[in-house]
Image (cartoon, rainbow, N blue to C red):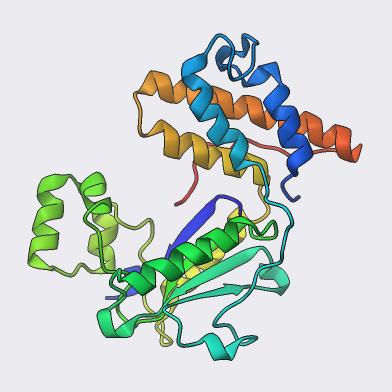
Length: 268
């Protein structure tokens, strides 16, 4: 699954990746060393070995590959009662998959069945080379997903996160955007799905971008934010080196022109 990740949530209220052969070449390339000093992941930069393993595994696709099994879509109406439903879009939206969270009795709270089905769906999506962008969508009107004791403190700080969680306060779309909890707040439409349509439009912007560059951009951001800026810059350099190696390998394999562009920001 490529790295585009969107949330179609309640803010409205109120060129495929290359496969194992290229990854093998990446692991053997001296450009994987931080700073390009040679020696590979176990060479003169041993502290980066775990990160390099993560980065190379990001590009490896399990075998054998199986197409996405849709659950809860019109093609599989018998699964409509599941708390987590997966749907692969078609036509001009091919490459976009949706996860529908549907636990109305508990307002999409994170229960055992909910989390188990969610992890199962994500594991399935990781193996699907057709999926480029994933949209999380709520099937419960007026609710996205209850549960934010880990995300809220990182976004808002501990004090404000505790205030919101302890009081159970609900935020409008405009308030959520002002706090940085959502990227966009849009006026609601008659169908009540304006946020979903905005997410689909954003997914369409991500869809044609170079998949390896998008994937490694996400890795650089997610891993880099966990460390100091110097280490983050080193992680970015490693990711960029892998983009270049993948580009070269892709051209060798396909004897064509590989389209790769390193993106500065990714909507998550």
